[in-house]
Every structure is written in C-alpha cells, then in structure tokens.
Length: 50
Image (tube, rainbow, N blue to C red; front, side, top):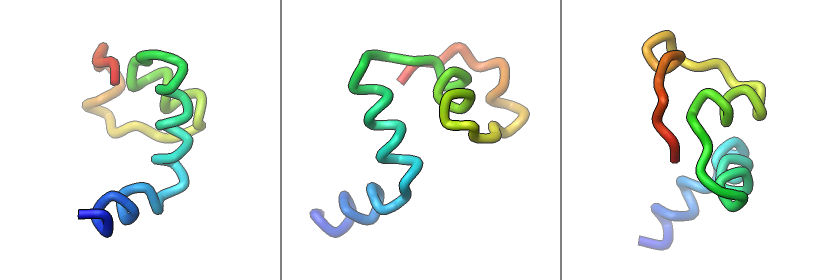
C-alpha cells in the first residue's frame, strides 16, 4: 500500500494540490487556475470542491 501512496504523490502537481487543499476546499477550476493547469472541457463548468 505504501508504494501506491508514494506513486500517487510522485507527480509534482499532486503535491501542489495537496498544499492548496490544506488551506481549505477549493473548486477544481480554482485549483487549475492557481496551478496554471489545463482542464478537460467537461470539467470547466464543474462546481465541485475537493
């Protein structure tokens, strides 16, 4: 199980996302904007928070 966790965290964007979310929930669009990430078209209108 530890291998799976470390594999998931190996992507630098995921660590950045965890740091952002440590401040509180954010909509996906805000996360993508703050990290300058592109979103798939079907997520651009999402109001989900993580």
